Image (cartoon, rainbow, N blue to C red):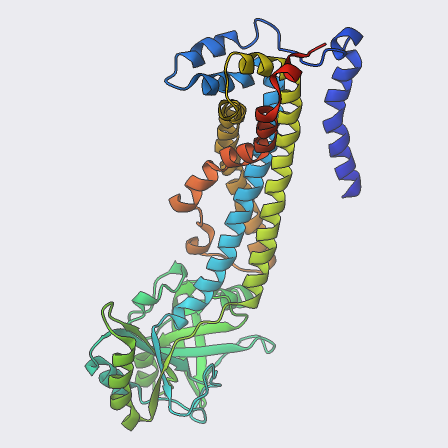
Length: 438
């Protein structure tokens, strides 16, 4: 890494060093040096015809007078745009990974659990663990005003025949409508008929299973073959088999529901609903609790690291623009003196300098955002392969219009940020000093 950094710095410095070495001595003694007379004149004439204030049209044509310098500004902004797009996409992916992996069975406004169960309790399944009478609880919830949707789920305590001894595999059963939970489905569909099941991506990868295969579960020495009709995504490290309550009961096995997730109507009051639900559920030894989702420490840490990386990349890109614009402004100090002598105000000077990098920043941003998206996509694919996970579209497709449009315009923001200081310096420069070119 140090050698690579040294190589990049050396190559970057080589171009101006070669140019400086060939520069005549007389030319180096000139304080303010304008570009060649013919360079950029066509751009100036075209810019003057635009419905813009004259200082802005002058700045808009400036990159065409010195294309090499404009290319350096563009390269710095391109680097920043690529880095910011990559970082924003990666941070959004981390958040969506956690939300998609855990939001399915945790998607709810309120939770219904066995009375006396501690918040955050995870049942080991089976009759020994606290569980609910799913039929009566479902009927009670349906009678409570403000209940929009509800489903129950729980660990049945069954085992998976043929699962790796070192892999803890759960067999969950569900009752009710799961369609509102946004569980991420990678392949196939959700179970609709008796004898069907959905397994998670972890189990599919470790056991080599796919849609159409059969997975056999066992409870109390009773075996139940289930046809896999879908593979879903979750962020847990356990293998999971999910099927419907009716499939278990039809085969003579017993489902154990340990939690109901409830979605409230949009106009429902949580306090009023809780009071009504508590009255209906208390005789069933069930309790109501809010669904409190605590942020993941891993996601918070990764978000902080990505945010720090983003700020560093913006700073590096802005410093690259700053260095180039400072050099360009100092070389054009004589021109600035002439403009000031003709009546250009400090605000107009700032507008001219900032406009001189706007077009370059816009073009670099329009190219940098797609490149950053491609880099993020490749990186995400490698990361998914490294952890043995296939990521659903809800995780990989993070560049929505609301995110992408600001990123496309981010090049202008980076360019303006880097040019702000030299623009202020140019505005404060004295006319007499600027005109003293020799």
